[in-house]
Amino acid sequence: MPSTPDSSSEARAAGRILLVTVGSTDFDPLVRAADEAAPRIDLPMEIQIGIGRYEPKNARWFRMAPSLEPYYARAEVVVSHGGAGTILEVLRRGIRLVAADNPDRPDQHQKDMIGHMASLGRLVWCGDLSRLPEAIEEARALCPEPLVTAPPLIHLVVREFLGAIENGGDPRAVARAWRGRRVEKP
Amino acid sequence: MKTCSIEGNAPSGPGAEEESAPAARKRLRVLLPLGEGGHSVEMLRLVALLGDRYEYHYMIVREDAWSEKKLPIPGTIHRCRRPHLKEKHQWKALFGYARLTLQSLAILLRARPHALVHAGPAMTIPVSILCRFLRIPIIFIETGSRIHTASKTGQFMYGRADLFIVQWPELQKEKFPDAVYAGLLL
Image 1 (cartoon, rainbow over the protein chains, first blue to last red):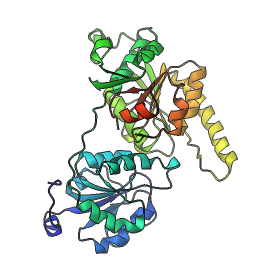
Image 2: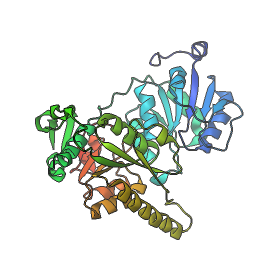
Image 3: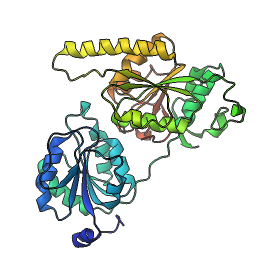
Image 4: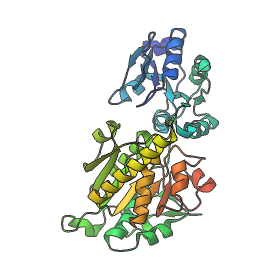
């Protein structure tokens, strides 16, 4: 169970890993920092490097996988890039998370999600990659509950809007009626 | 700000009874620029939720090989070139956007969509401007990584999209009071 704190030897016995993931693009500084930290961390590390150029020397690595699910299933800790999709995916599974924002991404939007989740104590924000080992240690002390997010109901609003077009009605009138509303129940 | 359930005002909601003969009715054509990364994930989730009652036209940048493989419902694929905002020379970015605008126009003429639905990023702006001119209704969904800060595309689309949807109540409260909040798609 990811939510019960266990010692590293138990983690090893259970085949637990530390998963590093950079998503579909590249984030070489994170891969390099993780690779350099690997010998000092008592958890086997596996790194998904995407289209990056740097190939790790101290850890097992792969470029892409059809699904990270089998890796998540074994992950004691995940170190991820700041992509919102990955962060939500990991937190919903209740896995301990270190997130590093990629300063190369446009307008540094990754800080919004990372900052929000860090302020709720749901992840450890590693803003300085030289402090990655400390951030990982910090994350191992977290006891996360799986994150529960609002169910998507956007399609219901979209369907009503498109329905107005289908029926020869006025979709803009539908949109006006929805303005400023919060939809929380289907 | 009102909290409400959809039931009361959704005559054309999910599984509406009159939709028993979809073949008889001409299907609505919906154009979906997928963006990349998280933007694409959101659009594909939306398509999966909307179901197969619409005719989908996907606009995908040439560099993106991933999105096409993940389409939950098949449709016509229209390729375009992604401009780079971070080009060293501004004229290159300008050229990129001029080319994308022409490609977007060609796609609109081929697909003849009844509606445009997208979640950003900036590559969706030319096609949105063209749809405004052509009076094609636009639905914009601010990407789920935005909780407290607005994206540039979101700022541009606010007031220009006919239906503006956000994925976090915080964002509706702090940045886009006229938006609809309807759960998290990401």
